[in-house]
Image (tube, rainbow, N blue to C red; front, top):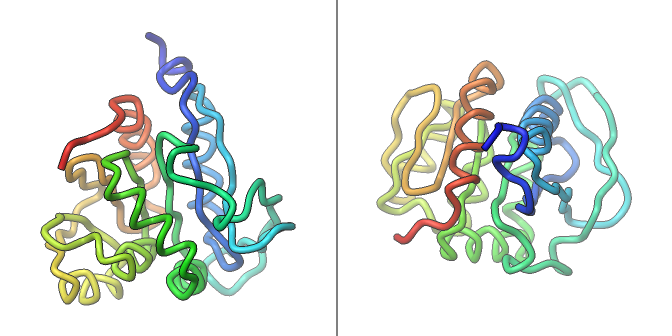
Length: 187
């Protein structure tokens, strides 16, 4: 199977809202689309979301495909949680977003998360006993939620792929394509 076919027929959700770090939205999306996946941008409300560069500079806006309260884990084969500081901070305050993430992780389907994205995982109480990495300022929250934190470019724990920051995107994108192709994991 070629890399362009690795994810053919797979449906991938990207859960993000205003404040998402643009490169962490765009590069993983391109990687899974290039591997043949159908990607839908899921957010808290319809319309467009405002991406950022380095958290403080406005970047592009992106069309939302569906509202998180209107979709189900059953609609997708994999999930991507990009970072930026305000994006996961908004998501973790939304019951529908937290529930979607909790259900996704508990389903055993693969999840890719980068930078500040694990804040939503912490809020969903799904890091307990898992090993992952993140942006340094999120690591105490992960530990306090029962997770094991390591400082590595990309970490895989039973279908949960995590990376620290945009510098890790090449390794992250490669690994999410690999894990998303493998599919469901049993915990």
